[in-house]
Length: 140
Image (cartoon, rainbow, N blue to C red; front, top):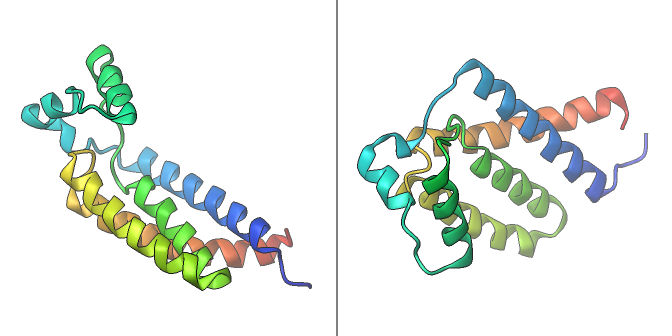
């Protein structure tokens, strides 16, 4: 069997890990740090940036509390980091730094608990390598 293209490998691993996170969400429905009333109020405040303004509007107008365990944001960032390290090492280092700060930000901004970010890292790593095995097994 020939070696899969980096694009095919990465997309397969991303999808695999997203579905793995959704499966875990369905087994362990956990609400993130916004459960704390003070944190909820902080997330409803506009902070002057486009994305934070959009999210604040969503949180002000809906009852959305979001899932938390594991952090799919962190898991997917980890998958992209591992893939980049495998195929374009310089970008892998850049992605590693971004992933580190993303993990911190999800906790700091009260979207996730610390354990959610850690479990996202573990899910991303284990899921990536499990996805590689699954990809070989089904020959995609």
